[in-house]
Image (tube, rainbow, N blue to C red):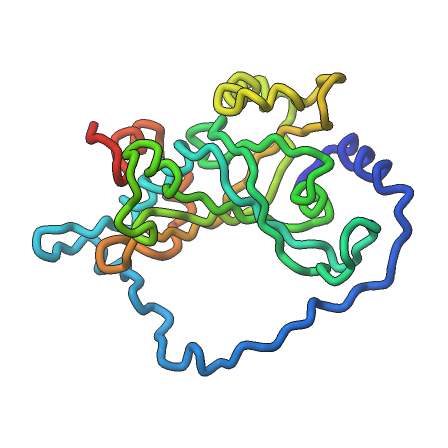
Length: 261
């Protein structure tokens, strides 16, 4: 997590009137019995990367690399995702229950692919948001994206099984973008082109409703569920392959419900 001194100072000022509290205890819960997993091998219904690409009754299961390209298209077409962070061990805000210390929380957020072809999504992080504050406190992040909503929009019908549609979880951290990076990627035009209402809290706008900061999510790992395991790859991608996918690559493929190029 890399943040500027200015942003850290701003957050410190906003928290300066909050008194530190003792480290909280974890949320109470009953441990799940291990017997739940006793008869379930770890790789059940998960396509083996060595087997992916094989054909069954004329249907070809996408390979790990082919699935990576599909996932990059999913990211490029996604306007929102669920950003998950972890609360710090020492909760200092009187507005946050101490019991949630060290607990993950997932919240929907706007995203846009403004730095193609890096595979790192762009976010407009508001300093008031829980996700931003957790990230500033040192939390890594994950971003869940899916094709469920977009499938409904383009087909105007419910899928026969939403569980058979692609989704992915991107794992990494947030990093503040420099002014040069923002200008080079034309981030303001890109992001407001996807989210017109984001003009209300653009960084540097004194009249903005909230203070915002341009951030990129640096993607280190990606977990993919392409659909049911007998017809799609399920598993972790090669990070180097993820970063090496070009715009031309993902523009040449289609996700379920899309018309063929």
